[in-house]
Image 1 (cartoon, rainbow, N blue to C red):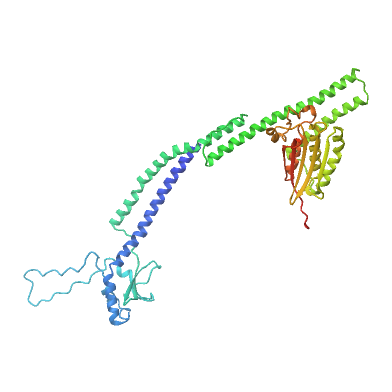
Image 2: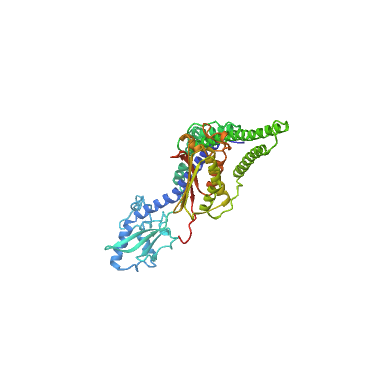
Amino acid sequence: MKFNITGKLVAVLSLTSVLLVAAMATAIYWSFQKGFITYLTELELDRLDQTVADLGASYRIVGSWDFLRGNHEGWMEYLPLQNPRITQASPPPPPAPGLAQPGMRFPPPPAPRDRTGLSTRLRLLDADRNNIIGPPGEGGNELLRPIGLDQRTIGWLSLTPLPVPESDLDRRFRDQQLQAIYPIAGGALLLALLIGIPLGRHLLKPVKAVATGAHALARGRFDVRLDPQGGDELGRLVDDFNALAKVLERNEQLRRQSMADVSHELRTPLAILRGDIEAIQDGVRPLDQSQMARLHNTVMVLSRLVDDLYDLALVDAGALTYQRSVIDLSAIIQQAADAAEGEFAKKDIMLATDVDEGMEIFGDERRMRQVFDNLLKNSLRYTDNGGECRLTALGKKRWIYINLEDSAPGVALEELPRLFDRFYRVEASRNRSRGGAGLGLAICKTIITAHEGEIGAQASRLGGIRIHVKLPAEINDHE
């Protein structure tokens, strides 16, 4: 038989209540057997005030306990051996009428009997707690009563606790205490049911909501959201579910958009390439060097797109490899700028560089060159002819700061954070007509992040955008 969570919670509360009542019964029984017996023993010691006084007076006369060593009959004279409720011995019965004669002497009353077993449990100890008279101790559980004389302790009365009471009164008292446990157990179980059922339903309401939402996510409904449930652990679970649903919804949107963008990016150069080839086959266009260069450019666009998609696939699979070593970042940045200088000159864009020398990082030389090649190509592609581009790199203590600024056209502030998304481009200015598939900056962000760095975009004072990169520097031991 399977129980839901509410049933399990009620069962746990009920079992806890039963165990608690059982523990209470055990505690009451132990308290009666131990605490009550100790209480009775302490009462017995309190009733020995006269014995303590008599022993002290005798000690004052003799000056030691020698008068009681081995003197059991003398010791018995100090003990109140009668039942504590009888304060004095009953007088002897009078003689029968007609039997009394003048001068007749009657026998003394019989010695009192030890009705409480006190003589078998009480002993006298000296000041150093050495046994003088009485039975030996039993396991160190005796209760002690000091005997004082002139502000000093001259001895001790040691009393062994009573055995377990077995009188009818004691049994009735014990049974009465134990029988009271049963209604307490029933009330506790009923209370557990009355509290557990509504409490379980209330506490498990967020869990059921999360379960319902999880089923919706499994069916592809990523727009599902749950109502906030408070600030406790269940409330945070609901918040985490909503955050997960939001991420899944965004990933699904990106996946669909990526599929559409990839299809479009592949379709455009393929259509151009197909049209050119068919035109050559039909004799509309001659197969000369200019036409071959046109075809080659289209193929290169496809090749770069395929390479970018492959790199992104490696990133998603976690298989993008890095061969790290201590590399000269200053030389890599300068080499990338020198390689792109000719292309910038063709568009009449001034490329200015200011790179500190000797900046080193621990990273992959090929991947870092890929980053700066992509950044420069992106700036070249989207900067108007006759514009300006500035590349600066500065090392400060444990960090290296790289900035790449270009001139118009610019990007709206709300669009800047999305420049590093895959296939994203601002259609108003930096659109497909300028080339590229919108993957370069996404790849740059992946590589920079893998090198424990940061990359972002801001508005440039030159009218375009400013790409800023922050990388951890490799510190030499001698510095």
